[in-house]
Every structure is written in C-alpha cells, then in structure tokens.
Picture (tube, one colour):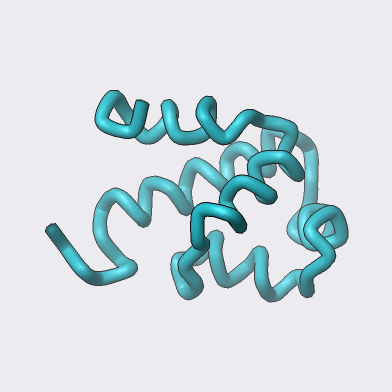
Length: 80
C-alpha cells in the first residue's frame, strides 16, 4: 500500500471531486461557502495538496449534492 498522498487512488479521488463540482455548476468559492471554509481549502484538496478525512469527505459530498456512498462508488468496486 502506498503511503503517499499522491497515490494513484488519491489522485483519482481528486479528479472525481473536481469533476463533480464542475458538473454541479459550482465554483471553488461556492463549495467553500457551503462548507464554511476558505476557497484555498477546496483548491488544496482538489490539487491533492491536502488530504480529506472521512467526515470532511461526507460534508463535501453533501455540499456537492451527492451521497457519500455514490461518491465512493465512483472510485470503483473495491470502495462499494
């Protein structure tokens, strides 16, 4: 198991999060406002510079209008 935050799986999660945000028609600023955090928080997790814990990921999925289970399913069968 890779220990780097730059693992292929984590990069894929970052890509999915960016895609979901854009599909929802939201800017980084709008997501940040929904989460009550600075825009830099969104930028950093989307670029992989910052890791999200499971609670943050849950709140983010809610801000994007998607169930956490649906978000995880996008990572592939091992996450379902």
